[in-house]
Image (cartoon, rainbow, N blue to C red):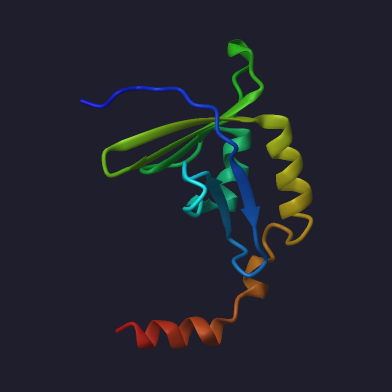
Amino acid sequence: MGQDSCLTLRLRFIYRMSDPYVVSLAFPSGSPDLPPVVWELSRELLWEGIRRPAGLGSVRIWPPCCRCGGGQLRILLKEAGETALLEVPFSKLYVWLVSDSFGLVSMGTESGLIDWDAVVRRLRNDR
């Protein structure tokens, strides 16, 4: 049986035009010699989760609950029997998503940045 614990971590949200559908969450590894642990999720899922409960399976997102004192967006991550529940300041995440993400690539225009020929070549080589 696992042990529950609560930690305060510096979590970085990263968006790159080279992977326009993805938002990366970078967690410190706990050691200065190791790179951060990165979890990738859909930018569209994150946007949906800001407005209403969203996600299935290994990633679920809930917007702030006004009845619970609301300023935190909650993100549940599950993998290999382990679970992490993140509480992220809603207003900071919202501003970042709108300015740093949608400011670079508007929702619905992501496919224009994909090199589809390269995707097809990669798929053919993976067989």
